[in-house]
Image (tube, rainbow, N blue to C red; front, side):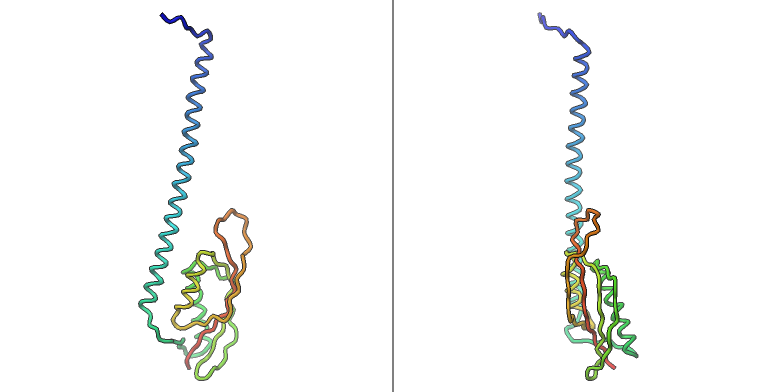
Length: 177
């Protein structure tokens, strides 16, 4: 026979409750860690899918576009410059660039063409910069990048992991008359 006996049954009950509660808390912590890891992986997959989609769009654009030089065509240089502004805003929207200022600069006659200048100021996520510049390079009608100024943008302090760059571009487009 077994001569071992518990003298304090309440202590045994408290110890059992402690084991159950401790195990439950440990399982909740492990579940939370697994959940967080799974969410991070899903976010990474979504970011990669977005990158692949953008790359496919750029590839489709480059295969459908001709290699000839084209110019804006409009009744007046101001209308052509307005179309150029609209094109730059659309390109910025495609590449998650937040344009804060689009300034129409001078319009000047260059031979048989008209040169239209724009200055763009905005903020671009660092991982979107290449796609945006590639979009400018492949843009039809042709856009010439005169200057590019980049610097790190002020952070908003919201714990955003995305690194933002402040960008200023001076662009030229050409129109025929």
